[in-house]
Length: 282
Image 1 (spheres, one colour):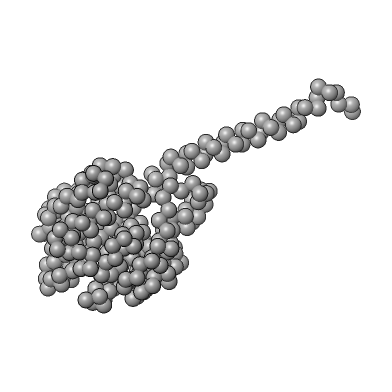
Image 2 (image 1 turned 120 degrees about the horizontal axis):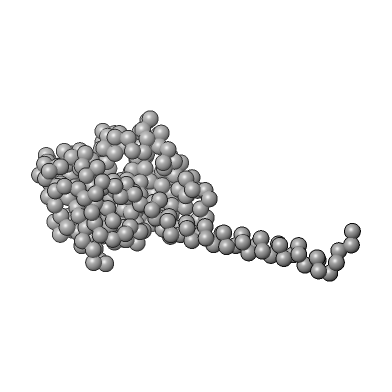
């Protein structure tokens, strides 16, 4: 068959149009991922908690002040028995608010620790929108509040759960505490994205939380607890964080426990491991 001069350009033109359409689709998908990713990472639920004393006996409402001008809600829970003179700064995971950590505060208070529970920006009725930089500022404000009560970093242990583990590792790199307790830490946000959102390129992540890398700079006594049946943060990632710690005290695996099971949130094995860490640094 003979092809006329008018027909020859059609195939290259179709290819160019298809390529341009593919580029447009990729740009649109990239923009969607860029714009919506934080709504997949940060999941504030439950609204504003009631006053501290309504939930934990003897607890006080506290207002934190961030270095970028936000006021955040927090609760201070004093030690109930045998005050150790040591405070615990608790950094939450990516969902809920401080009310859901009340059982942990009660358990730690019962072991002689003063406890500060706080909510990040955008959580628990607080103003602002969460981000890696923002949560770092919130954690610094929590440490400042404890320092005002006579608990400087050298008299404070940081307790971080999941996302909160990433937050306190970052804080510890700036303000080393007496000890660091990480519950279900992930190795990095990019590693988590590869597990749960493999279609998201790491280069598009706005927040990174390089936990395993950063903890190598934190030379303080550290314990890492993980649930054997955790389907949210793979145990291998928590083990990687433990292996990267320069001063690992203990690696605790809670048999049969999932990420949000009570055994991991405030169970006796976790509380006992935290107490052993505190005894180590006294």
